[in-house]
Length: 97
Image (cartoon, rainbow, N blue to C red; front, side, top):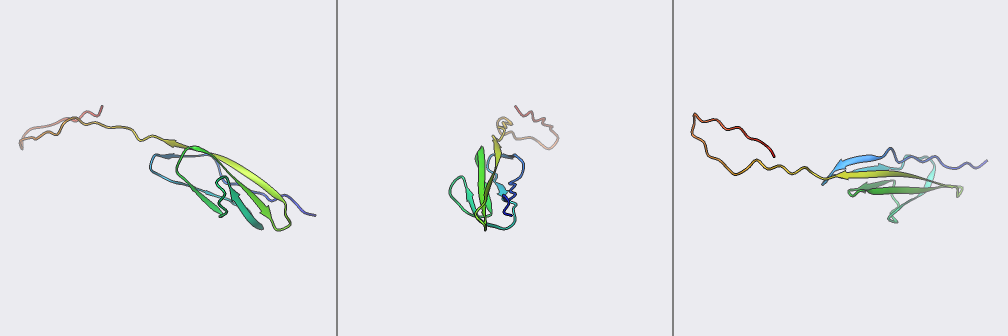
């Protein structure tokens, strides 16, 4: 009896801007991987928000697919104000805004 391959690329992911996220196609007895961009490796590295999917084909020709969402969060902007020079005994309190 031929069965549909089990495939799991993991849960939805979240990263910060400038980072990457690796989707791993966890499956057994797979002869072919096809990701949404046409690549065919066992893993896929993503760095932009979106929905990612992989379709796998096993040796007998049966296929299955899995999808996950990646959210990329913008980095916060921080401004500590203008540069300041202090004398040895002076104190400065920084206020991020």
